[in-house]
Length: 487
Image 1 (cartoon, helix red, strand yellow):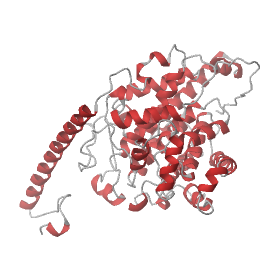
Image 2 (image 1 turned 90 degrees about the vertical axis):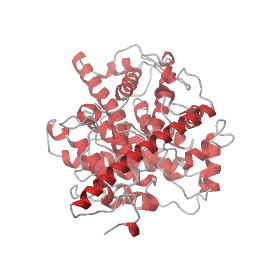
Image 3 (image 1 turned 60 degrees about the vertical axis):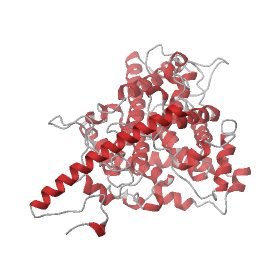
Image 4 (image 1 turned 135 degrees about the vertical axis):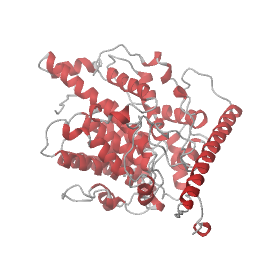
């Protein structure tokens, strides 16, 4: 179902989104159905991205080969298997030992900073729905770096080098884009990581009723709070535009997908290659490189659209084009698999199948799957997400509540939500700010817990190795160097 929305207003007063929707429809039944469809897509986008992030943590920073060796079944659950034995356990290495199965990472945290900032400004029945500002996001990022996600009292784990450096810089709260640009220039204008793309998909939800180019503009603006490289900006423009188009039912085929990608590129060429930005680019921008990431695979089947992305190539796993390509290629795969098929059965396993395929390629798997999960969730809807993933997502009910609040603000769901009355949306979540000394204690306790967990894992692995040795078969333990392995 395609949503055709007129953005013209007949008066100077903002028109409530719920009323605007009512004028488009011919009957109460159609009205109710369309709201349900749109709400399902919005919640699907938000939960889908968090699920991709959560499942992707299982293989983050692994090679595809190591992922297969570690999880040979290629199956993951967050609610427990048939024996009720809990979620699929992590590979317990130094990267994962500090984390718990079922929790999302910093990728979803940063997306939530935009969501909470937007909800704080609005309530059900509001007419005009401005986007978050650069300063609001900058302030919330600074709080997150120092305190973690305040509403859920979680730690700021997974902080990337670029975001950490920029957010800690003098003047960041006053002019974040300028600080980000200075850092980019100082580091040689070469780095283009995926840290802004992973957070901007909620802008596609917020821009449901806005003109496409308004959404493009806001995506570019909010990318530049930390990531000013044109490749990062371009990724956010294209990704956010796709989310908006998917929610509205305007992206139902690869032709539709390619049309939005084309319009996004055209907008970036017109609006972002001028003035100071143009002066900052060394040489001519490589548009052909972009094409290799979003058009690879041609029109033949779905067998290996992801293969050409080389997601686990060690020197570039966090490259923004790899994350962008992951989402676009998974969306192409979904469309090709559903072509000519009818009914819910064809859709029911698709999200799990495709996200699992993606994360088993390794690399920056949580971020790749976070973005891809947002696109697939918007395309397939919440009902198509696997139950044994969505019902095992830690803080899943809380996140669903925020997605439903977004639906109320957008006029898709009845309710009386008022953002300013929701303390979760306040920058400090209505809680006292933790001192640096208190945070150091929390980090120390986390390190102790991590060490204990690693110790248990080592003991279990050594015991298993001894058992295998007695049976006449030996194997090198994961943390042993090759030259110390015993034969």
